[in-house]
Length: 199
Length: 424
Image (cartoon, rainbow over all chains, first blue to last red; front, side, top):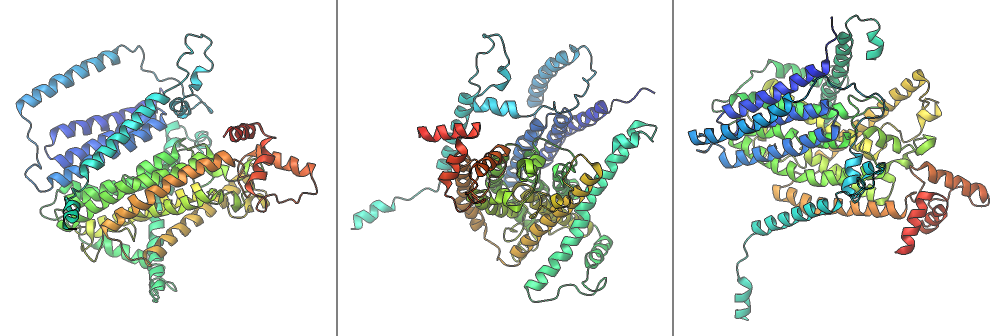
């Protein structure tokens, strides 16, 4: 008997889970159940990342996507609990638009998937060669350690890494945070001026 | 272990399946039996604090079978589902909560190499997964179709989402000191480099004053994020009947409690690993017994067993501390909870993070003892060998400046630091 490739088996399990829950998101009309299925689908996707040995990306997926959808769920509950918006009706136009966009993406993905020669996974590298997030982190800090071994001087360009884009993104996020705090602040009544007038 | 079993079992996958089953069985039982013990302990601790005896009769002297009797009672209760509830979500919510709590144990090491999956981002993974426990609580609160449940769930959501921020900042400080997010590496870094001793002075909590305060901020935030008193607003039995689990009964209710005690143990374990040296005890007992040698498998296994006991002991201590806090402090109001998080914990965590970075930059060897760098230790022994008149303990008596300068001209890493200080 040919040995079973357990990596592929687990890949299929996680992929089926992710796809199944994604379909469930489409088929249900209750907004909280949608968010629930979406969380499960995204968690199965993070399982795929762990299976591929990309621990950092998998943990990121759990943190950002699953956690982010969690906040979405909270707002879904807060805004719609027991209200008239609890079930969403999709019109025919929305179905058409969705099928068009989704079909285009599916076509691109299928084309990419079928263009790969063999689906056999590479042999697992034994020892300490597991991919780590160190290079990525160093790149974000402004040192491209992966380019140190490059002999070609043209290829060695961009040694400064991603520090500037990283900083721009963080400052942008800070601005967004400050702006939202400004918008959400309690409105102060103009009491001080009247106080001045009384004096 | 899988390699060992493979020699005797004909299909290879059977060996892996058995090994995976054994590991999962052990971990599940740590959570389940742990919950049994902790519920009994909680009753005893609360009894003693309130000048009572707690359970005394079931199972002999200390009432240690009380939880089992409770469990039997819960199993025989009817599994109710309210009329207006969203049935699927109502039934699934306890399991979601428990899965999130249990997933943290996959990456939580109990001793050197004794871990479900050794992730190189284990800290990050555990923080991400612990935050998901609130998912089950929100689902329970929403699906119960009860006002009390919904109130409790919304409070819990606001609380946990806010406390994730300072919690993450506190966790970054030991990661920064160790230079790794791998929990096993972080714990090993607290054994004082090449000597592998493991005195408590090498724990990160005593590394510098900033990490000491960071630990307390971490513990506050961890208590809040696992929904324990004084942050147990989601249950708040004096206002909300029982909060998010008002409508639950029987076994599903107890699964919520198993999840709660499971995450209490997990965050205590994370605290032990990040700040208290993991399985490296206050005294280097494994080193004295000669069990720290990794080359001999039997001795190493015995050392790991002692280390795992040590680690579990630290976790139990953390959980007991949480119980002590619970029965001592009154419950906060929701605005006080938010104030504690946003006005005190977050700025404190940020300041401690900045302080730890500056400390690391100016005093890489540490003030009391060179904590984790073999190079710095060697430098110190060289200095002491060169100047025998100098008393052996350079540490506490010396001010920070001489230590830094004496180390600075010896190791290359510290030359950089010295140069940096010169330019400032």
